[in-house]
Length: 250
Image (cartoon, rainbow, N blue to C red):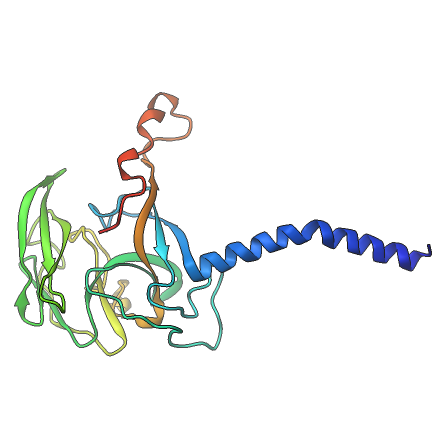
């Protein structure tokens, strides 16, 4: 066997060894692009629905696919969505921040294209109609409410939120008119959420283009308390919030 045959044999053997590894990577990328992808919640803007340390599963197919659907980078020269499905008011959505698409946020969809959104004294108004809410208790130092968002079928969609005060920042806003092909997002921790109430030019979210929607948050995989460190052995038993494992995101 001459040197060329040995080189061919070496290359063939190398490719045979790495082929399963490459196939596994390709499969993971396909699943995370088309089916679902895990996301870790880094902030408390969606408390009480999502807690810091929650690991959620986002359904990538829920709204179709855009250039931001890839788990690594983005597709160039591609606008709009493939196999588009419209989101519903009240969905908890993972999206790319319009002013910095490398950053991923998760918020609740409040305003659809053409909606008029405003808050007055802490209360949410959609198309000049007051959105009902009722107090059901307390959450730490905040008041815990159930808010009922309007739906096309007239039944409404309930979700929990917290308010520390009805006279805090962003509790009184102008009226926002949601542009075509855009959405208005808010956090369930209404007094501590950087969301569509703050314009992108002022460091907020602003209106979110439809192509920036990445996934619908459907399921919590697991949840860990970020205040318990790996070397804090005596508190390991409290690290995992077992009651949140595999819970539906509402």
